[in-house]
Every structure is written in C-alpha cells, then in structure tokens.
Length: 236
Image 1: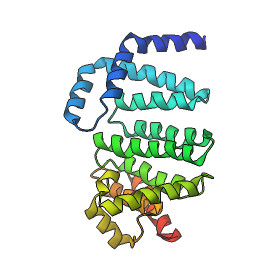
Image 2: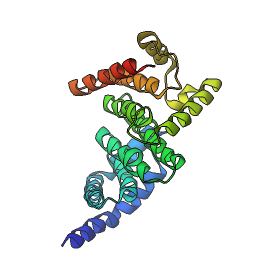
Image 3: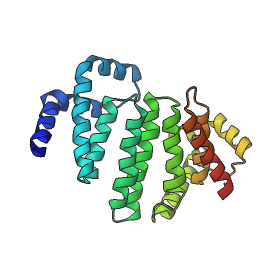
Image 4: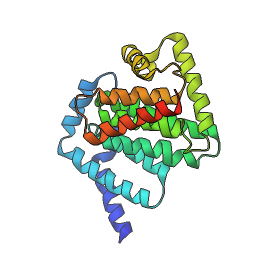
C-alpha cells in the first residue's frame, strides 16, 4: 500500500511538476526577484499541488533516512514555497547536519555545511530579506555547528571559515558574505567583536540582524539574545 501511495505522489509530480521543478532550479531567485515572483504567481494552484506531492515524498525519504535525495527534494520545495522560512531552514538542516555527518572526510563535510549556509544566506534571505527566523538559523549554524562541539570536524570547519573571512577582509568584499559594514561596526561597538574570523562573531552578527527585523516573535527574540549571550561568555 505504501508503494502505491508513493507512486501516486510521484505521478502527481510527474504530471507537470518536473517541468516546473526544472525551471525553478535553473532560475533560482537572485538577480531578478520580480521575474521570479511573476513565474511563481503564474504557477497558481499548480504550485500548491506540486508542493504537496514534494512534501509527501520528503516525509517518505526522511522515514527511510535517504538524506541526499531528501536534500534535493527539500531544495525544490523551498523554491515552490519561497516565502516560508521554515522550509528553507528544513532544506538547509538536511544539508548541514544530516548529510554532512555521513561524509568520510572533514573537507567533504565542510562542503555540505557550507552548502546549507549558502542556501539560507544567499538564497533564502534574498526572497525573505531580513527575516528573523532565517537569521536565527544562520546564527545557530555558526554557533553550534561551526563554532561549537556538535561535530567532530568542527575544528576543520573553523579553519575553513577563517580562511574565507581573511580573504574577504583582504579584499574588503564583505558583501560576498551578505554582511553590511555599518551593521558590522554596530556589532563591534555593542558586543566588543574584534575578530571576524571567529564563527562566534558571525553568530552574533546574524543574531543582531535578526533582532533588527521589523517582525520577530518573542520566542525568536529570546533565542537570538541567548546566542549573543553565549558567544560573549565563551569569548569573541
């Protein structure tokens, strides 16, 4: 019975979702948000149908622990429902947490962790500018995954991140990391940040960015404050 339901879901997607999925993957939001919004609107009710099918398939893959396939599907889902921050977080979590730990080397793990970071920062935030929940996810990724002890490869992640920051600082190209110089100065002044190569500094930056959002829940606000407090206690 499970197989029959799975095939039905796949059939729904195949009926037209594959074409939409291909277009979405090739035309990810970025240079032309208005054009992207136009295409998403043109999909109309079909977008919801395709999203339901993808969600159903994602649940099956998660039950079976097939995280690589799940990550691909979750990314598609993010582009079908681009203004739902929870979906971007879900997709990035699979990349940075579930798949990364399956990799044999620290370098391979880092590629997946960075992919999760880029998905949130470079794509999710482009269609959800300043969203407090996406900022929370980025801040937590820096604090717990890269800067913490959750992953045995974290020391290697910190080296990779420090090299990226040194290169960006040398070229004064902070926009490549979606970081605003004015906000960086505010973080330096308020929280005594002096070393931007530290992932804890980035955790504070993104937590502060989330706190600056126009709309923020009490739960997210409290969590972001905790991230800043922890970073300051452990040293910046």
